[in-house]
Length: 191
Ligand code: C5P
Ligand code: MG
Image: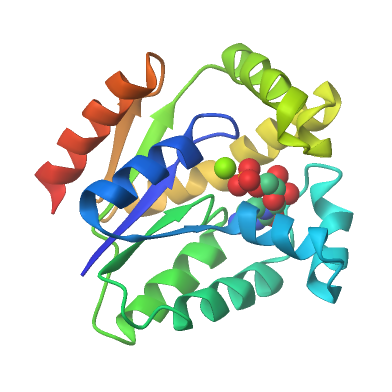
């Protein structure tokens, strides 16, 4: 089993690159942001709860996000491994993920952090907002809050896996192809 975390600030290209890695390494892609958006689109109780946070660029409470992730993972008992995109975003989420994987004698093989500067990210997200249909991609104040939340809460997750010698950084600027080549090399060297 191979379990990877694609890490990085909002708009760093995690989703785009995850889709490429999934094909290459035959993994199941889990984007917690996409899962929340699906629930919101269907006006489910989970979607309605998540919307209160997502609309402000805040994090959905850990218990809710972890519950949703567990539920998704149990739907894929056949998986050869997972690629986690946008999760874990807090230390408790990372601990819960490690514990969950440990229950089936698995672990995270590596965390790959895409590095992109703030101003580039804001440009990218605003241009994605023109077509993504995401309210949180259209408002610069919300985008800046998402970046602060990343710095205040999520960056710790990098250190958590770095302490286990499982974290590496990838230059996240360039063509999609260039970035996926860098990632592929880094992933291949890890597994
Ligand atoms: O990962 P993505 O950028 O698509 O997530 C969109 C939003 O979903 C985040 O800004 C946050 O509000 C919420 N989210 C969360 N916890 C996660 C993943 C996403 O609160 N682990
Ligand atoms: Mg994404």
